[in-house]
Figure 1 (tube, one colour):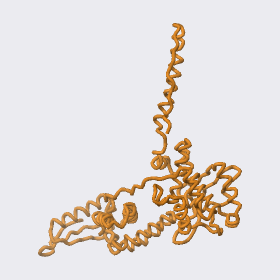
Figure 2: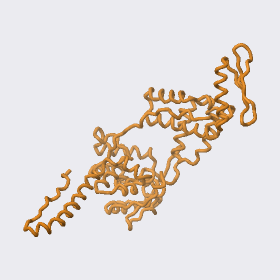
Figure 3: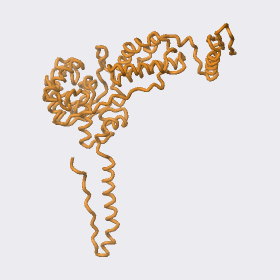
Figure 4: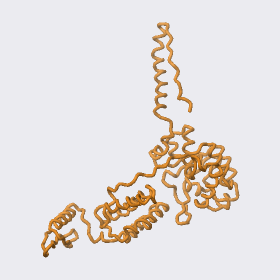
Length: 390
C-alpha cells in the first residue's frame, strides 16, 4: 500500500510498506517530489532492487572495518597498499559520509581534484577510485546501497612509461660495477632469467639444480610493514622451472658455495647472510648504475625490474617463441606477454610470407620442370633473398 497525504502548507508525506513489512515515509515540500520518490521506491520493491534505507546510513569509516575483514585473501603487498589508500585518502574525504550519500558526481569530483593537484600520478588516482569501487561493491552485494556510485566515472589513462632494456654488454658493465661483488650473480641471474625481485630474494638454495641447469621458482619474499614473509609467486603461472645458461651456471656454482649462501639457505642473501630488503639494496643498485655510467643517458634512473625486461629482450633476440617467453617469465597469459613485448618480436607475417614463398617455388618447379624438359627448356626460379641485415 502506497499513498501521499498533505500534512500542512508545503508539506507532503509519501508512505509505502517495504518488503520487510515496515512502513517507510518521507516528507517533501512539493507533491511532485513526493510522487517521484514514491514511484522510485515502489518500483524498486516490485523488481526486487529495494534496500533498507537504514542500512545505507552506516558511514564509510564504519563500513571500511567490515570490508577490511574480507581482504585477507589478497596478496600481502596488495592488501597493505589498499588499506593504506583507504586510510590516507578515502577516509579523510568520505569517512563520515553515509554510504547512501556518496554519489557518482562525488566520486568524479574526487578524481578531478586529485588530478588537478598535480601531486599524484594517473596510476595513483586510478588506484584510489578502484579501491573505493571495490569497497562500495561489497556494500551493494550486502544490500546496503542500490548501486555502486563509482560506475560510470571516467578514470585517467594509465601512465605510459617507455620500456627500457639493456644490451648484453651493458649487463656485463653493470655486473662489473656493482659493489660488493657478492651481488654480481644476482644481477646476471635477473638479466638472463627474468625472475622478479621477490622471487630472487626468496629463492632457496635447494631450488637451484646446477647439474640439470634449472632453477625452480615456487615462492617469493614479500616485505609488508617492515616484516619479511615467504609466500607464493605473484600468480599461479609464476610457479615454474627456468633453464639456466651454461656460463651462468659456472657463475652460480662459485657463488652458491660462499659462506653467506650456505648459512642462510638462500641463493641470494646479503653478504652477511640475511634476507635482502629492497631499501638496503637500493643504495647498492644506485651506486652501481652510477659507476656503470648510466646516469644522464638513456638508462638514467634504471630500476631493478628493468632487468626483467632485459631478459625478455635478450631471449627474443635469440629467436625465442612468445609462448616460451610467457612460460620463462611466469606471465599469467600470452596476452600479457604480447602486450608488453610484442613490439620486440620480428614481424611474424614476413616470416610466414618467406616460408610460403619457399613452398610455392618448390611446388612450381616440380610441376613445370617435366613439361619444360620435354621441350628442351630449363626452368629457373630466382633465389629467395633473406631479410636485410639489421
